[in-house]
Length: 362
Image (cartoon, rainbow, N blue to C red; front, side):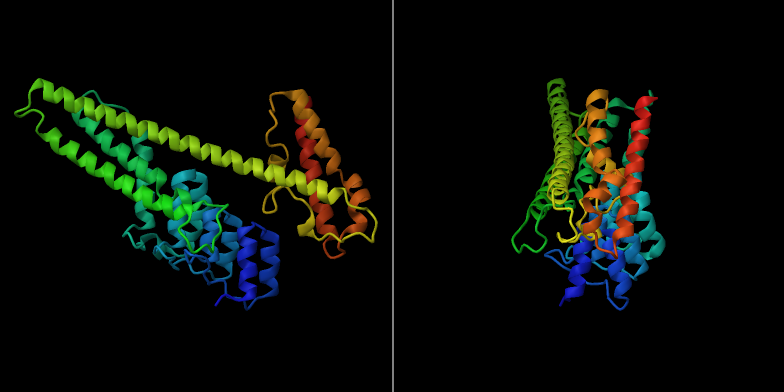
């Protein structure tokens, strides 16, 4: 049974509220962070991996989070981190995989319910990169090379989609019905099984191309292979386009929420009798993030090449977060215990905006 305090930990990890999480864990030193929630039976450490939150991940590791804990599908936190590295590349590898690996080397070789270990996933990522950097040798048999590329394309498609739908930020975690992530996982498995079987049939037919096949039959088989390869390529491009659209929608959603929260907070009364504001009540653009990540949310959607428009938006944000103007609007409403931390963050934001404005003048 998950306690009320554990639910608070889950909420802070899910919302990316690092400072809240750190403060709460410091106040509750006896709190066990090894618990699971949701239909997938994931731990807070696994949730941090799914969200790509390396700061919360390191904090949970310091509190004794179990790297070897398995969710409903037998995945450990390192499986989820490796899946994210397949999608996001080297940065996710260093942020998520490396800390988990150092904390628990054994987890690298622990298989999930499908018999796949994190080491297997990372090998697939390495092999995909190697294929992309390998130039074609003139001595290679063109037909054999084409078949290898065909199998490689099937494998690449599997690696690209393996775990992609774990990043379901907008899904209810406790829904008992099959959610979009489960549906996508099932479709992915069926798709890969179908394409793998098709590729195996082509490989079998390839071995008999030079024996007992007429020229017309060989040409038909080759055309069929090309059509399959073209379908795979188009489907892969469609997947990349969908992923890009989803990322842009997520970014626009963050920007919209930031603007709405700014309007709701800063239009409030400035008197001491108004609702008090704690650190978490301030409409930070990225509650988890660094100052640079906050600025990126503030200025998202503005074309930086259009200097007049970009400068106008930048000035608006400089005015909003200028320490003196912020103090005039909100200082009387700030919770005393959080006041200094809030003002320090506002100052850091103002300095970063000023630095960015300075680059426009050079």
